[in-house]
Amino acid sequence: MSRGLVVLLLVLGALVLAWELPFARNGCVIRNLSGACCPGCGGTRAVSLLLEGRWAEAAQSNLLVYPVAAGVLWSGVALVANRWGGRRWPLPLSVSRRGMWGLLAIVAAFTLLRNLPWAEFLRP
Image 1 (cartoon, rainbow, N blue to C red):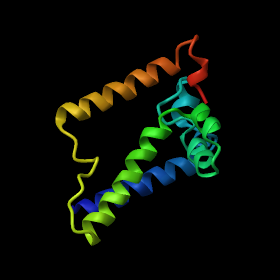
Image 2: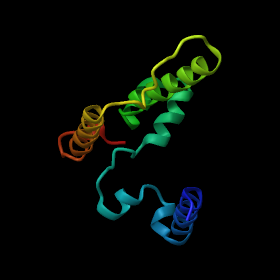
Image 3: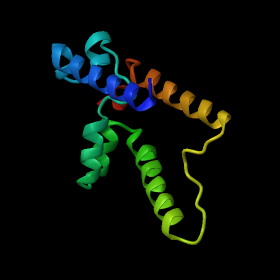
Image 4: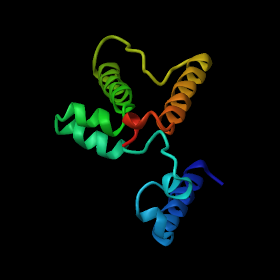
C-alpha cells in the first residue's frame, strides 16, 4: 500500500470520526473526553487573533502560537529564498534529535503547566 493511500485513508477516517462522534464537533476531543487542555487548545482562535493583529489576546488563547508562527514564517521565507534566491537558508524543520526531544519537553511542560489549578492564565 502506498504512503499516499495510507494518508488518504487516515484523513478520511478522521473526517468520519469527526462527523459521527458528537463530542468531536463541539471543540477539542481531548478536552471533551478528559477535561484537560492539550497543547493545541485555543490554537485556532490564537492564530485568528494573531492575523487580526490582536497580539495580546492571541497570547491569552495559546501562548505557543508565537513560536509556531515564527517557525512557519521562517519556513516560508527559507523555502522562497532557497527556490529563487542565491543562498541556502536552513529550514527550522532540520532539527537534531536532541533538539526534537527539547521541543517535545517544552510542549509537555506547557501542557502540564496549563492544567495546574494555579496556572489559569495559560488556559484558553
